[in-house]
Length: 205
Image (cartoon, rainbow, N blue to C red):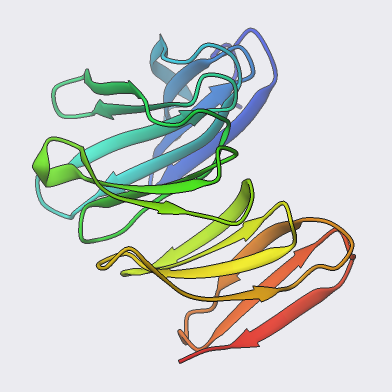
């Protein structure tokens, strides 16, 4: 059992082999060795609840913990090799509800401020694209350079991250927001669900 890492409820965690990173409602984060059931280190990187945590590796020398906050609009990047925070910037003007990375060392974020941003890990975590959405981003998914997000107005929007262009949009929820989006592994279908209480499958090329 893993215990003692947080003083408030755990809101998110990420897992890779025997390594686990957990995040708390008060903004704390903890790194665990699951095999030894031991907390390796703890740190406070956010002001308020942590919304997302990701473990990113390129299979070589890059091993990062990426996290985003609900209240502060901050994206933090922690380098596990040097045990140091290498980024702690306010990236959005609202809650960051979507955070993922790909094998091309690109971080993608989507926010309540109606924008999606991409950061290049290999270029000092600089912002390389900023894409506008139709409403607050509630969720999203990412495969390679293809990104799909669900918005508060019920739209699902798809983007090419290389060009920053919106490829298409589709109204998937007529009663409110799109709350969850998944791009299937066959790269031909997207599943979305939300306030209408129905799942929708979209085919794309």
